[in-house]
Image 1 (cartoon, rainbow, N blue to C red):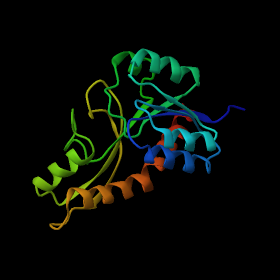
Image 2 (tube, rainbow, N blue to C red):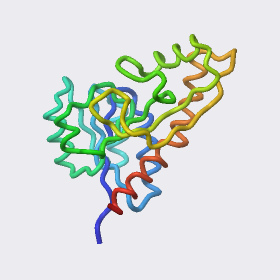
Image 3 (cartoon, rainbow, N blue to C red):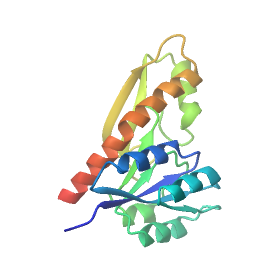
Image 4 (cartoon, rainbow, N blue to C red):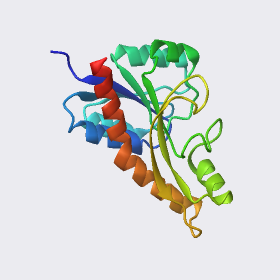
Length: 192
């Protein structure tokens, strides 16, 4: 019998979504987080991964070719970008076609593209007086935030909202929905 689908998670920040994915993966028999690969030093995430028996590696400065070697060395079938702020290069996409997922903090195609991440997105949403925002999980292709959309989840934006309060709403959606979309995609990969 084939083992669980092995996931490599790429991060650039604190790693809250990576931690959530690891925690939720422990409830899944068909999914295993094999690696967290960070583009910057992150001692707290390193300790968390060690305690959770998940490999942690830091690649600073970032090198896509070296990252690909690390990811393939852990036999990852799926790469998940969770707060990862580097562009995925075409050579990496070629090795993992339709097997790189990204979490974006807006309802794409709105507020996507280069430089649109975190509070930059939330500020624009507030400035443009949007009444709705949310998250998008999509497949990564060669253009920023333009890959096939797998799922979107929304929340209301109220006139009193600030970028910080909207960030909390978005974070709640991420914690609730990101793992379920990733794990459903893993199960779909197994059926292919």
